[in-house]
Length: 338
Picture 1 (cartoon, helix red, strand yellow):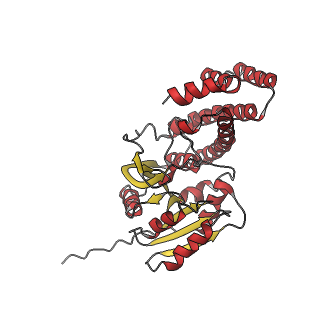
Picture 2 (cartoon, helix red, strand yellow):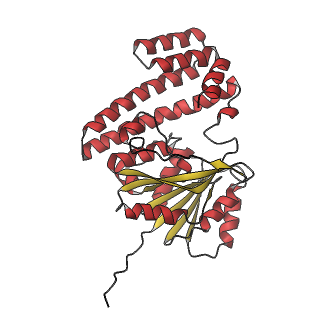
Picture 3 (cartoon, helix red, strand yellow):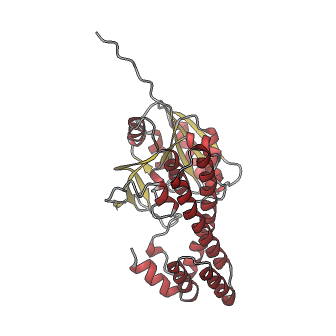
Protein backbone atom coordinates (compact mmCIF):
# COMPACT_ATOMS: atom_id res chain seq x y z
CA UNK A 1 0.00 0.00 0.00
CA UNK A 2 1.47 3.35 -1.04
CA UNK A 3 2.31 5.82 1.69
CA UNK A 4 0.23 8.98 1.46
CA UNK A 5 1.96 12.01 2.95
CA UNK A 6 -0.31 14.12 5.11
CA UNK A 7 -0.23 17.77 4.05
CA UNK A 8 -0.39 20.14 6.98
CA UNK A 9 -2.97 22.86 6.51
CA UNK A 10 -1.77 26.44 7.09
CA UNK A 11 -2.85 28.42 10.12
CA UNK A 12 -5.26 31.17 9.08
CA UNK A 13 -6.23 34.31 10.98
CA UNK A 14 -9.87 35.37 10.70
CA UNK A 15 -10.12 38.99 11.85
CA UNK A 16 -13.31 40.89 12.68
CA UNK A 17 -12.72 44.66 12.72
CA UNK A 18 -15.35 46.52 14.74
CA UNK A 19 -16.25 50.08 15.68
CA UNK A 20 -19.59 51.28 17.07
CA UNK A 21 -21.54 48.38 15.56
CA UNK A 22 -23.56 47.16 18.55
CA UNK A 23 -26.62 46.57 16.39
CA UNK A 24 -24.84 44.11 14.09
CA UNK A 25 -21.77 42.81 15.93
CA UNK A 26 -23.42 39.74 17.46
CA UNK A 27 -24.18 38.26 14.03
CA UNK A 28 -20.69 39.11 12.80
CA UNK A 29 -19.05 37.39 15.77
CA UNK A 30 -21.25 34.30 15.51
CA UNK A 31 -20.44 33.98 11.80
CA UNK A 32 -16.73 34.14 12.61
CA UNK A 33 -17.04 31.46 15.28
CA UNK A 34 -18.99 29.25 12.83
CA UNK A 35 -16.16 29.06 10.26
CA UNK A 36 -15.58 25.46 9.16
CA UNK A 37 -11.86 25.79 8.39
CA UNK A 38 -9.23 24.61 10.85
CA UNK A 39 -6.61 25.48 12.11
CA UNK A 40 -8.05 28.94 12.60
CA UNK A 41 -7.37 31.75 15.02
CA UNK A 42 -10.15 34.29 15.34
CA UNK A 43 -9.21 37.82 16.34
CA UNK A 44 -12.09 40.14 17.19
CA UNK A 45 -10.69 43.64 17.44
CA UNK A 46 -12.63 46.70 18.54
CA UNK A 47 -11.34 50.19 17.80
CA UNK A 48 -12.41 51.82 21.08
CA UNK A 49 -16.15 51.81 20.40
CA UNK A 50 -18.31 54.27 22.33
CA UNK A 51 -21.33 51.94 22.41
CA UNK A 52 -21.89 48.36 23.64
CA UNK A 53 -19.94 46.68 20.82
CA UNK A 54 -17.09 45.45 23.07
CA UNK A 55 -19.51 44.18 25.71
CA UNK A 56 -21.45 42.10 23.17
CA UNK A 57 -18.21 40.66 21.77
CA UNK A 58 -17.16 39.51 25.22
CA UNK A 59 -20.59 37.99 25.89
CA UNK A 60 -20.53 35.85 22.75
CA UNK A 61 -16.91 34.74 23.07
CA UNK A 62 -17.49 33.72 26.70
CA UNK A 63 -20.23 31.33 25.53
CA UNK A 64 -18.10 29.81 22.75
CA UNK A 65 -16.98 26.19 23.27
CA UNK A 66 -15.75 25.39 19.74
CA UNK A 67 -12.34 24.36 18.35
CA UNK A 68 -11.01 27.76 17.26
CA UNK A 69 -8.64 29.89 19.28
CA UNK A 70 -10.31 33.24 19.94
CA UNK A 71 -8.50 36.47 20.81
CA UNK A 72 -10.26 39.69 21.80
CA UNK A 73 -8.43 42.96 21.30
CA UNK A 74 -9.87 46.26 22.55
CA UNK A 75 -7.90 49.34 21.52
CA UNK A 76 -7.42 51.87 24.33
CA UNK A 77 -7.85 54.74 21.86
CA UNK A 78 -9.39 54.99 18.42
CA UNK A 79 -6.75 54.31 15.75
CA UNK A 80 -8.84 54.71 12.59
CA UNK A 81 -9.00 52.10 9.84
CA UNK A 82 -5.34 52.13 8.79
CA UNK A 83 -3.97 52.23 12.31
CA UNK A 84 -6.41 49.54 13.46
CA UNK A 85 -5.32 47.15 10.71
CA UNK A 86 -1.65 47.79 11.52
CA UNK A 87 -2.30 46.98 15.17
CA UNK A 88 -4.11 43.74 14.34
CA UNK A 89 -1.47 42.60 11.85
CA UNK A 90 1.01 42.58 14.74
CA UNK A 91 -1.28 40.17 16.59
CA UNK A 92 -1.92 37.72 13.73
CA UNK A 93 -0.08 34.40 13.61
CA UNK A 94 -1.71 33.02 10.45
CA UNK A 95 -0.06 33.05 7.03
CA UNK A 96 -3.37 34.10 5.46
CA UNK A 97 -5.54 36.84 6.96
CA UNK A 98 -9.28 36.85 6.29
CA UNK A 99 -10.82 40.24 7.00
CA UNK A 100 -14.39 40.84 8.14
CA UNK A 101 -16.34 43.91 9.25
CA UNK A 102 -18.42 44.11 12.39
CA UNK A 103 -21.61 44.80 10.44
CA UNK A 104 -21.29 41.97 7.88
CA UNK A 105 -21.86 38.21 8.04
CA UNK A 106 -19.44 35.62 6.68
CA UNK A 107 -20.83 32.30 5.47
CA UNK A 108 -19.45 29.27 7.40
CA UNK A 109 -17.43 27.94 4.44
CA UNK A 110 -15.91 31.32 3.54
CA UNK A 111 -12.44 30.72 5.00
CA UNK A 112 -12.29 27.17 3.65
CA UNK A 113 -12.98 28.30 0.08
CA UNK A 114 -10.52 31.21 0.29
CA UNK A 115 -7.77 28.90 1.53
CA UNK A 116 -8.51 26.42 -1.27
CA UNK A 117 -8.06 29.17 -3.89
CA UNK A 118 -4.89 30.32 -2.15
CA UNK A 119 -3.21 26.92 -1.89
CA UNK A 120 -4.35 25.82 -5.37
CA UNK A 121 -2.38 28.74 -6.84
CA UNK A 122 0.69 27.62 -4.88
CA UNK A 123 0.32 30.83 -2.89
CA UNK A 124 0.66 33.09 -5.95
CA UNK A 125 -2.80 34.52 -5.26
CA UNK A 126 -1.49 37.01 -2.72
CA UNK A 127 -4.94 38.53 -2.23
CA UNK A 128 -8.32 36.86 -2.70
CA UNK A 129 -11.84 38.21 -2.55
CA UNK A 130 -15.29 36.95 -3.42
CA UNK A 131 -18.68 38.06 -4.57
CA UNK A 132 -21.17 39.07 -1.88
CA UNK A 133 -24.87 39.21 -1.24
CA UNK A 134 -26.10 42.64 -0.19
CA UNK A 135 -28.43 42.86 2.81
CA UNK A 136 -30.08 45.83 4.50
CA UNK A 137 -29.96 46.92 8.14
CA UNK A 138 -32.63 44.37 9.08
CA UNK A 139 -30.77 41.53 7.33
CA UNK A 140 -33.13 41.25 4.37
CA UNK A 141 -31.43 40.39 1.10
CA UNK A 142 -31.27 43.09 -1.57
CA UNK A 143 -29.40 41.10 -4.22
CA UNK A 144 -26.01 39.90 -5.41
CA UNK A 145 -23.35 42.62 -5.39
CA UNK A 146 -22.11 41.86 -8.91
CA UNK A 147 -23.06 39.57 -11.77
CA UNK A 148 -19.71 40.02 -13.54
CA UNK A 149 -16.25 38.68 -12.81
CA UNK A 150 -13.37 41.17 -13.13
CA UNK A 151 -10.90 40.67 -15.96
CA UNK A 152 -7.19 40.13 -15.44
CA UNK A 153 -6.64 43.62 -16.83
CA UNK A 154 -8.94 45.16 -14.20
CA UNK A 155 -7.00 43.46 -11.40
CA UNK A 156 -3.63 44.46 -12.84
CA UNK A 157 -1.18 46.94 -11.34
CA UNK A 158 -1.87 49.48 -14.10
CA UNK A 159 -5.66 49.39 -13.71
CA UNK A 160 -5.50 49.62 -9.93
CA UNK A 161 -2.93 52.42 -10.03
CA UNK A 162 -5.26 54.53 -12.15
CA UNK A 163 -8.24 53.89 -9.85
CA UNK A 164 -10.31 52.28 -12.61
CA UNK A 165 -11.27 49.22 -10.59
CA UNK A 166 -11.89 48.65 -6.90
CA UNK A 167 -12.05 45.38 -4.97
CA UNK A 168 -14.94 44.74 -2.57
CA UNK A 169 -13.10 45.01 0.72
CA UNK A 170 -15.77 43.33 2.86
CA UNK A 171 -14.80 39.98 1.31
CA UNK A 172 -11.02 40.47 1.16
CA UNK A 173 -8.27 38.11 2.35
CA UNK A 174 -4.53 38.53 1.98
CA UNK A 175 -1.19 36.91 2.65
CA UNK A 176 0.54 38.21 5.77
CA UNK A 177 3.69 38.48 3.64
CA UNK A 178 2.29 41.70 2.14
CA UNK A 179 2.79 43.49 5.45
CA UNK A 180 6.13 41.81 6.10
CA UNK A 181 7.41 43.03 2.73
CA UNK A 182 5.78 46.46 2.34
CA UNK A 183 5.39 47.38 6.01
CA UNK A 184 2.36 48.90 7.75
CA UNK A 185 -0.31 51.00 6.06
CA UNK A 186 -0.38 54.76 6.32
CA UNK A 187 -2.36 55.32 9.54
CA UNK A 188 -4.67 57.74 7.72
CA UNK A 189 -5.79 55.08 5.21
CA UNK A 190 -9.58 54.66 5.11
CA UNK A 191 -9.72 52.19 2.19
CA UNK A 192 -7.42 49.27 2.89
CA UNK A 193 -9.19 47.41 0.07
CA UNK A 194 -7.41 49.73 -2.37
CA UNK A 195 -3.90 49.28 -0.97
CA UNK A 196 -3.89 45.55 -0.20
CA UNK A 197 -4.91 44.32 -3.71
CA UNK A 198 -2.49 46.84 -5.24
CA UNK A 199 0.35 45.41 -3.17
CA UNK A 200 -0.73 41.89 -4.15
CA UNK A 201 -0.68 42.75 -7.86
CA UNK A 202 2.86 44.15 -7.50
CA UNK A 203 4.31 40.82 -6.37
CA UNK A 204 1.73 38.20 -7.40
CA UNK A 205 -1.91 37.98 -8.43
CA UNK A 206 -5.33 38.98 -7.14
CA UNK A 207 -7.94 36.23 -7.28
CA UNK A 208 -11.71 36.70 -7.49
CA UNK A 209 -14.16 33.96 -6.50
CA UNK A 210 -17.50 34.51 -8.21
CA UNK A 211 -19.50 33.07 -5.35
CA UNK A 212 -21.12 35.09 -2.55
CA UNK A 213 -19.25 34.22 0.64
CA UNK A 214 -20.22 37.32 2.61
CA UNK A 215 -23.50 39.05 3.41
CA UNK A 216 -22.53 42.70 2.92
CA UNK A 217 -24.73 45.00 4.96
CA UNK A 218 -25.85 48.38 3.62
CA UNK A 219 -27.34 50.48 6.42
CA UNK A 220 -26.71 54.14 5.64
CA UNK A 221 -23.59 54.54 7.78
CA UNK A 222 -21.15 52.72 5.50
CA UNK A 223 -17.97 54.49 4.38
CA UNK A 224 -19.20 54.21 0.79
CA UNK A 225 -22.51 55.98 0.23
CA UNK A 226 -25.05 54.98 -2.39
CA UNK A 227 -26.34 57.58 -4.84
CA UNK A 228 -29.72 57.80 -3.11
CA UNK A 229 -27.99 58.68 0.18
CA UNK A 230 -26.27 61.74 -1.33
CA UNK A 231 -29.21 64.05 -1.92
CA UNK A 232 -28.09 67.29 -0.25
CA UNK A 233 -25.09 69.54 -1.08
CA UNK A 234 -23.87 69.47 2.54
CA UNK A 235 -23.91 65.66 2.61
CA UNK A 236 -22.09 65.61 -0.71
CA UNK A 237 -19.46 68.07 0.54
CA UNK A 238 -18.74 66.12 3.74
CA UNK A 239 -18.63 62.82 1.87
CA UNK A 240 -16.21 64.10 -0.79
CA UNK A 241 -14.04 65.85 1.79
CA UNK A 242 -13.67 62.63 3.79
CA UNK A 243 -12.72 60.62 0.71
CA UNK A 244 -10.42 63.24 -0.82
CA UNK A 245 -8.29 63.17 2.32
CA UNK A 246 -8.32 59.40 2.16
CA UNK A 247 -7.29 59.47 -1.50
CA UNK A 248 -4.20 61.54 -0.65
CA UNK A 249 -3.15 58.90 1.89
CA UNK A 250 -3.82 56.08 -0.57
CA UNK A 251 -1.67 57.64 -3.27
CA UNK A 252 1.21 58.31 -0.87
CA UNK A 253 0.99 54.69 0.32
CA UNK A 254 0.97 53.45 -3.29
CA UNK A 255 4.08 55.47 -4.14
CA UNK A 256 5.85 53.94 -1.15
CA UNK A 257 4.80 50.44 -2.24
CA UNK A 258 6.00 51.09 -5.79
CA UNK A 259 9.41 52.10 -4.45
CA UNK A 260 9.61 48.84 -2.48
CA UNK A 261 8.53 46.79 -5.53
CA UNK A 262 11.07 48.57 -7.74
CA UNK A 263 13.89 47.39 -5.46
CA UNK A 264 12.67 43.80 -5.73
CA UNK A 265 11.96 43.56 -9.45
CA UNK A 266 12.03 46.77 -11.53
CA UNK A 267 9.90 46.61 -14.70
CA UNK A 268 8.03 48.97 -17.04
CA UNK A 269 4.66 48.46 -15.34
CA UNK A 270 6.03 49.95 -12.14
CA UNK A 271 7.01 53.17 -13.91
CA UNK A 272 3.65 53.40 -15.68
CA UNK A 273 1.87 52.80 -12.40
CA UNK A 274 3.97 55.45 -10.70
CA UNK A 275 2.92 58.01 -13.32
CA UNK A 276 -0.75 57.07 -12.80
CA UNK A 277 -0.49 57.38 -9.02
CA UNK A 278 1.41 60.67 -9.22
CA UNK A 279 -1.42 62.14 -11.32
CA UNK A 280 -4.02 60.79 -8.89
CA UNK A 281 -2.14 62.36 -5.98
CA UNK A 282 -1.99 65.71 -7.75
CA UNK A 283 -5.75 65.59 -8.42
CA UNK A 284 -6.53 64.45 -4.86
CA UNK A 285 -4.55 67.30 -3.31
CA UNK A 286 -6.38 69.86 -5.44
CA UNK A 287 -9.74 68.34 -4.56
CA UNK A 288 -8.87 68.27 -0.86
CA UNK A 289 -7.82 71.94 -0.95
CA UNK A 290 -10.94 72.92 -2.89
CA UNK A 291 -13.18 71.17 -0.37
CA UNK A 292 -11.42 72.82 2.57
CA UNK A 293 -11.56 76.25 0.93
CA UNK A 294 -14.79 78.24 1.23
CA UNK A 295 -13.96 81.43 -0.71
CA UNK A 296 -15.34 81.29 -4.28
CA UNK A 297 -12.49 83.32 -5.83
CA UNK A 298 -9.87 81.09 -4.21
CA UNK A 299 -11.64 78.03 -5.58
CA UNK A 300 -11.65 79.58 -9.06
CA UNK A 301 -7.91 80.25 -8.72
CA UNK A 302 -7.22 76.65 -7.71
CA UNK A 303 -9.29 75.25 -10.60
CA UNK A 304 -7.51 77.54 -13.06
CA UNK A 305 -4.14 76.46 -11.66
CA UNK A 306 -5.17 72.81 -12.11
CA UNK A 307 -6.18 73.62 -15.69
CA UNK A 308 -2.74 75.13 -16.36
CA UNK A 309 -1.14 71.95 -15.01
CA UNK A 310 -3.16 69.94 -17.56
CA UNK A 311 -5.17 67.92 -15.09
CA UNK A 312 -8.01 65.87 -16.66
CA UNK A 313 -10.68 68.12 -18.17
CA UNK A 314 -13.47 65.87 -16.93
CA UNK A 315 -12.27 66.38 -13.37
CA UNK A 316 -12.15 70.17 -13.83
CA UNK A 317 -15.74 70.22 -15.12
CA UNK A 318 -16.84 68.12 -12.14
CA UNK A 319 -15.19 70.60 -9.77
CA UNK A 320 -16.92 73.58 -11.38
CA UNK A 321 -20.30 71.86 -11.00
CA UNK A 322 -19.50 70.50 -7.56
CA UNK A 323 -18.59 73.84 -6.02
CA UNK A 324 -20.72 76.30 -7.94
CA UNK A 325 -23.72 74.20 -9.05
CA UNK A 326 -23.88 71.39 -6.48
CA UNK A 327 -27.49 70.39 -7.14
CA UNK A 328 -26.76 70.01 -10.85
CA UNK A 329 -23.68 67.94 -9.95
CA UNK A 330 -25.76 65.66 -7.74
CA UNK A 331 -28.31 65.18 -10.50
CA UNK A 332 -25.83 64.56 -13.33
CA UNK A 333 -23.11 62.54 -11.65
CA UNK A 334 -24.99 60.80 -8.84
CA UNK A 335 -28.39 60.26 -10.44
CA UNK A 336 -27.88 59.82 -14.18
CA UNK A 337 -24.42 58.21 -14.22
CA UNK A 338 -24.07 54.56 -13.32
